[in-house]
Length: 161
Image (cartoon, rainbow, N blue to C red):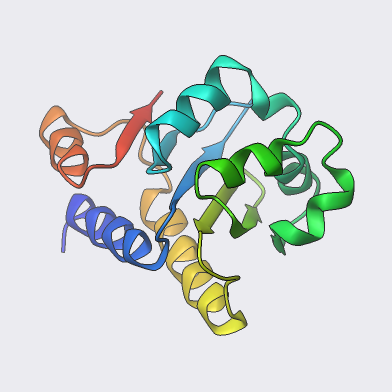
């Protein structure tokens, strides 16, 4: 299977496991990801971007300082600006953040649902998919226009630098 198909399959699997969406920043170097895959609600993404919430997001702070995962409920005490409460308004009620770090880069991701917290087994499955996505995308700097269109057809916004 080629890399594009593998990436598309992994994103489709993740999309099915995350009813309220996800955001994955792969291979962050110098504070910019090589790939950013997002399928959180458009209105939330717009607000998050417009207000520059990434700078104050406790999940992002945790992910840059740690590896592994943390449930969003466990970040409540560090959410001084109420970002998690704002996210709930858009259906990002329950979720977790994962962080992968190696010698060359860091990958951060947030996964959400609106009905209940993720079970440990579900977190394990999603983390396995994220690990695989992290490996498949390692060393890729940009995708071709054809590959970009194919991934956008999955209704996932993709940006790359």
